[in-house]
Length: 527
Image (tube, rainbow, N blue to C red; front, side):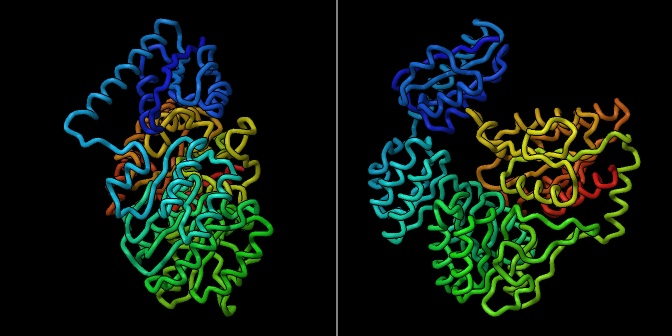
């Protein structure tokens, strides 16, 4: 099977258009893999690594469009090219019919919207820094959705933003809620008194949704980008987010979430949190739960807080994203936070585990997580690592292991829509993991919200049903455990998504942490 490249010179297209174009290409007969990308050096390197770069593509300039196809024959590749050309022509025609011209530059956008205060930037990482710089110089806050922005550029932009009293949220900031306005992959949650500063995306979504489910609301949810708490960046935007939330009269409690900070940054963060004057809840995903038979949550870690929150001025350190949300609710209501292991009674959980274990074969031992949300995948893997041996990150380590795969990582989204938008790659992985005779539990997340697929559960249910039918035919029982991150006010409606999954035999838990713990309990009894 060979790779063919077709290059359209000086033909720029935005990332969403290219991802949709990739989906059209891969639907063509005889096409095994495809990608439509601008010819930046970074993109060419990604195409080369994926085995999709051919001679014509090697000559592409950053302003050229590369259509790369791995196909059974030249005829199939050329037919896919024709599909792509038709899609591009159709898009141009549609855009010109009765639609007001869209601004092509930041200056044009400001002329059309002179009162704008924030720019959301989603362009290839190589160009994102320059566009963010223009926006900051124009006095705009920036939500930098783009990833693959150089670290040095991030530091430069955040220092400039701080000097100008502006926010630079990102890079790779997928979710935020500002003044009640959801941005990116955000959920429909009520306004309230809990503010969130997050160096994570789906982690922020999980916390805001669980706060809403508990009957409270969110004042602001400020995403700072996944690298902000690294020692290289030093928490530049986290500091600004904390100061803004502490000064906000509508914010009674601040919740801080992210991956564990760098060794130097954690010292600065500890000092900032203690001096805010506003009650705080902290959770860093990846701080593992201790190995204990009950799977009960741990005390504080990372040297940040008294786990009971009783020390004066100290934040409460939560053990999971769910515990962070519930602790923030408790603090807002003046009650004592109580960590949650399972929402159901212990005997009900035990029966659930036994019901799943009884029909399984002896060689079914492993949990296989197939995730769309990066932070949710990180949390699930951390919980599994705390309670099970032989847990590996991602796709490494061969077959005889527990693993959680984050399909939102760059290696899986090359020229493709994110799995929260398009479930194609996820369906492939669900069937692949379900077909392994050693798989005992498929562990899944379903993420709702603006920008996500209109029916995320429906997108993956065909693969779940297929995997279970195959297991049944081979005399195996495949347990499927999931959580649904969302609210009733989301476009997809959480209860409808839960009902669809439950009807297909999926065990839906109230949170990602509870889903991972249940999967760990099932697997622990298989050892």
